[in-house]
Image (cartoon, rainbow, N blue to C red):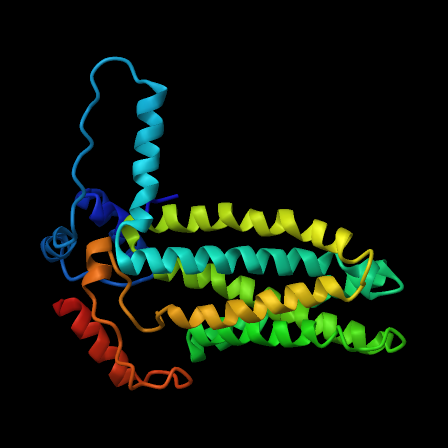
Length: 296
């Protein structure tokens, strides 16, 4: 597989980036403006400083310090720090709710095998319907509403009498569709929020942190579910609803040029608060923001 041309440009490997772009243009039957012009555009990207060679033997302490310094870049600047912390929390919650709900068959259904089959089938619409939704409504609103609807459905299980098994199953499946949709969109959304310079680092640590939620979820089902069968779904629903509110802190990325470096992300102006967060930005507004970010 070819390396990302964005990453190659940011790290100063312009010739390799040009080769990858020419190959992509050939496969997609597109034409590039010219090697010199493309190289000029690539050189406008910020180049990283070359790593200084270490003298002597490589020590474990030095390696650990370098890795910690590399990871700390996600927390050094205000905007990137906010994005990182919000995504860490969202990944923990979505992982906890997703796997916790999948393991709740014994608490929410008299037949856990049927529950598991239906739970798996719910992922088909969750993964297929999100594509046109994200393409039309953007990234933030679908993620927000997926978390919110999942939270409402799971919280509604608590007051539902156990005798209404069909209603409990319906609410659980609705929560599974929504939380699976939130999981799918969140992965795509996070790749657009992190700058190219730290994208793999940011998304990779998000997945690492998300495992905290998957570790916690079985204990919630085992400890709370053995006493109150509805308690795990209430916990998963409440945390999902909190995640929907926290998602308001993130910007919309639809139609916006992806930032190449941390400095470019920090230099961008915050979108005007006059625009309603319930309304999808128009093409003119997207063009204005794109021009503003490029000028900055």
